[in-house]
Amino acid sequence: MSGAIPVDVRGLLVCPRCRGELVDAPGSLVCERCNVRWPVEDGVPFLVDECARPVEPHP
Image (cartoon, rainbow, N blue to C red; front, top):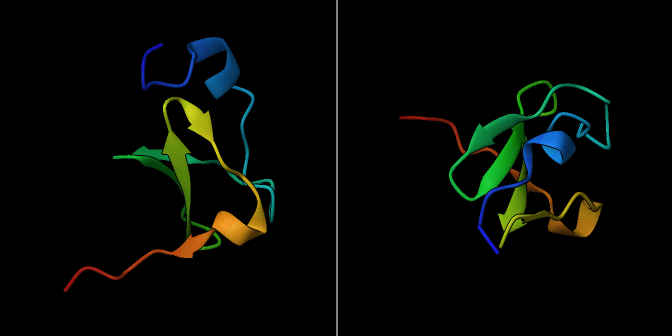
């Protein structure tokens, strides 16, 4: 199995908090509206609050 989320599934995913767009990032999906990073492991996105992490600002 590839580490990427299948294209047909990826198009259906939205932020579980605000229903906003998720942007692809290395090893995660990011909601820029909520400023939250959701992990993706082996092509499986973990879109549950316990897994959410704040996006660290760039220096």
